[in-house]
Image (cartoon, rainbow, N blue to C red; front, side):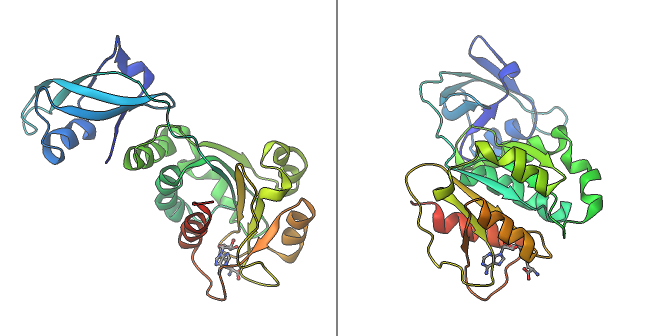
Length: 242
Ligand code: SAH
């Protein structure tokens, strides 16, 4: 990973201690030693540099315990895109979530499109204590710290009526759909984007039309139908530099 993040409640007077995978990573992968500098940050806060002030344990009988003192001199990198996702199976979601965090997604609205499997909404992955570590992993990978917010809208129609208003203005709304007269390169203006990605069974015609009504421009990556996670990453990669 490229930055070690600590939760706010782990930091007391600029000193944080960890005894979990982060400590193991600092010692084994980063070959950390006392006095060495580390990229650090606070989940949902500022980022900066820390100095290792203590290493205890042997990683076998007793876990490594690493103490770091840090400064948070820099604002974190702000998210640039929000995603409306008709969720795939939890197995796929689990792979996708860290990558969304790493790629700079700020908000993830999970919406109940027609072809979303109904039992998805009972998935244990939807509990914050289960998805949060996946998102933090993605942030540590990319070296950022702003935690994506996940919201659930079981009713797609209700989301369109009530949830969409505070997403990007219509010129920056894109719906990914392999079929029909989609643009091959979306016209985006300055500012934050919103990208809508369909369920594993695809958007229905009515759903694509409703999104178009709400200002979304269709965007196709071509005739190859990609799995949700591949499509999402390919789409973000295409849009990322604008
Ligand atoms: N069987 C479905 C496949 C859906 S793939 C169908 O026929 O529509 C899941 C989602 O990934 C799609 O709804 C779309 O948002 C995105 N996606 C997959 N391949 C894509 C492509 N070639 N272009 C644009 N979006 C794509």
